[in-house]
Length: 308
Image 1 (tube, rainbow, N blue to C red):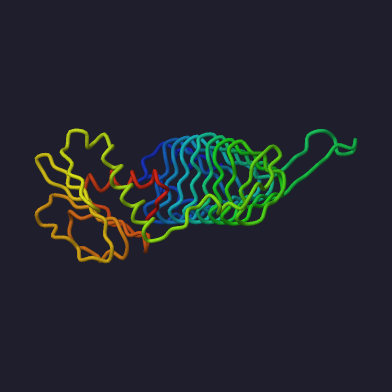
Image 2 (tube, rainbow, N blue to C red):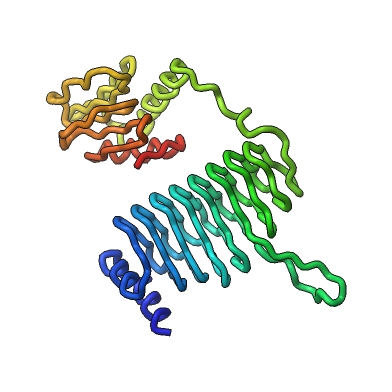
């Protein structure tokens, strides 16, 4: 009862007070964790690793909750039941209105993505078993890098192999191997998932990187800026001057004449300059500084690009 009261009080507190309250009742909370307004987290064993963000108005009630580093759970989702929920590193539950029934355990491995209105049922029983009606209980497992978009239903006992993709609106009533493209009611494997991927040569990579930076010009923040598009870079001007540059094993450009610089590429050397943001695709690391750098970081998320 005391835990329920503390968790309820914590739900309306700012994070600077919320996180110490969680730790006071034994929850293991990492660094830079953020939990939104009126989100309730009730568990006998709760571990939330570094840089996890949980939106507002979520409800968690279970035996054991484990959330890996850099995971994101947006608002208005519900995960309830007597068993355990384990989310790997950098899992995204896009929401809203994802529901997980934890009559048995559910695990989403590293870098899984779950779209809105998704439903996970680990039990199927209603009418009396002794009158011949069916009964099924079973945990659900999604492997690494599984992408399941909106309105997908998972039934008890299913597992999905690594690097699989599920089509919107599918009903998953059986297990599938890795690299499956899954679709239908009930779902079937229609091909290998990797047929959707383009072979990434250096030429194709550079083409896509240019597309990303050029499309950044559509950001509403830049509407009143003068933008000069050059090969592999943008020069952005108003009263100040900004640079966005692709980096391919080159020397870092002279940044002194710019008010803010964004470098996007591979194997970027560390730059100790408060006006330079960098996004390294090889190491998947970012250094984020300045208003434009933060907007570019959000822009990259629309391409599925992630950085630690």
